[in-house]
Length: 289
Image 1 (tube, rainbow, N blue to C red):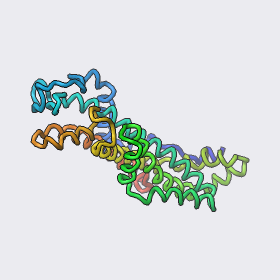
Image 2 (image 1 turned 90 degrees about the horizontal axis):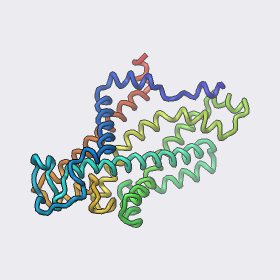
Image 3 (image 1 turned 135 degrees about the vertical axis):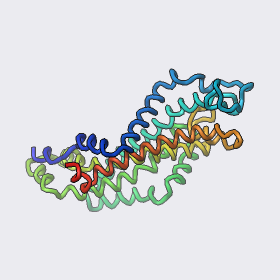
């Protein structure tokens, strides 16, 4: 009972109060919700099929018929931007969710057991951290072959070590607290102590980091697509659309509109992450009481 009381969950009341005091965080939430709804109802919102080609209407600028213009194959850019969220957003979320789970397991076990086991796990983690994220992701994606699934796998492989490191440090700092000793004293198993008593106190920093990383993951995924290591060329994906616009620099709308989609989503996620980071700061929390 003592352990459960001390394992403080996320304070949703403080999140609501902080959101009211941080208009940028509210803007970020609104923008993210709008993009999620757009991606969910893209079939109803898109004026054309994103794969429908019309060579006679190729490379037309924004007009009443095509608000965002058309690409080199006559496909409607607006429809492709709307459908692009169906690939980019789930990919970014899936990468961070998977990396968080894998990193949390490795970091929590290493920080809790300590000793030789911790050293082995951390040295294994540092093997992946020795390379820049984008370079290692490119190498893995190129080895696996260009596809959405392979790009996601490559990003998860290079992303989880950062979560393992932060969770390990948090577990080490928390496991010596009195309420953890109380949980052990009443007979809780090591697994229960770790996952029911210690980890709940490590959620907030990991949540902030994950929120900020979703935007970075979308950028990296767009970068892999830009380099031809993501979805197939015909797929309506933002990074691939920006890449297609390179060969038609004079047709500014080809890269501008998918680029703006990436920009708005990444900035919105950063606004949310900054707000959550302020909330996790003890000095900020004192001002909310």
